[in-house]
Figure (cartoon, rainbow, N blue to C red):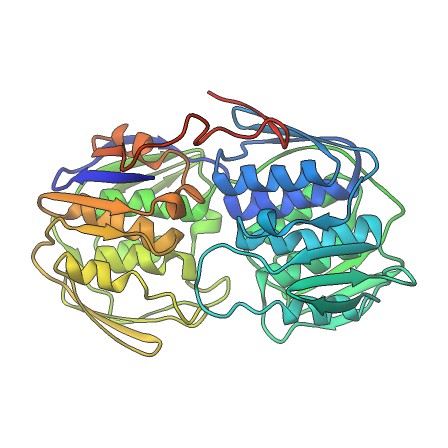
Length: 439
């Protein structure tokens, strides 16, 4: 077990190079199953979720090698169509392997996935869409058995909500299906476009990504390719937020500003000055942040739910009253109790959170409840007076690569500390599941 220890109150200053996007890397890793030969993914983040995806790929029969920020996947014939529960429970995004395995082998057996507990995230939408493409499903003791007796075929599908995961599963299932699939009310997130770009590079026929209707015409086969994972826009706004909450300045390198266009105006609204340049972004924080009258999370191109906790931490130290509305996940305010423990003044009623800014926060011992909530606690600790300890940081490691080292590089006093004796093999990646060459 590990924790982060933070000495707050110091403005951050310097440069951070942004790693690849977790939410792009995971569906693309699943997509490598559909490709014959070797696929090379560059700018892939070194995250526990990525390593978990590599273990799933290896279990299914792929050869998966991780070297620094490059993942190489070699696919021949899959030796399995079953993903064990222990692997499925490592990350919520493991459900994305459903469409890929079905598309490759015509059958798939898996348990319900794990990951952050953000309230009900039913996979019914995924299953209903895949049923329209010819898939059959049955559940036995928590095990989901999926078959395609007559093969996957194209269909006209309308999602009741623009779910990112359901959109990705349909795309992965449709690229090798017979005929044309037209997906209406599709998710429009930049990570969807990155997945589509990867699949097109492998020979897929996809158009309309980034819009609400995506058209996929099935092809006979896909070939391995080389692809660079897009920068992580949520990690990017997290580090910009770290500079903002400490009154610092930051240059974010390796970033594309277009995917962040739904967040940068909010940073300016709270008083930050943002200067975009090709491949980099500069932020200059004010002495005191300003409140935001109303901030609502919505599917892209709206304000992302993944950034809600990050901005709540900043708004806790802003002048004035901010009102936030969470419209994506029911349990996305689980970080509020920790912020209140540190001195924040926040009132939650259903989907609405009212944040009254305070003059200062005080360091405290808190526990990360999920990935983005944990990141919010790190930001609050950086902006607080005194020492903050953040426990249960495995949540944070799912989406931020060596967050303490990244922040140390711009002047933060933050350290990773062992909280209990660990076995000799703790933290070691099982070489039987994937080969990872450490830095």
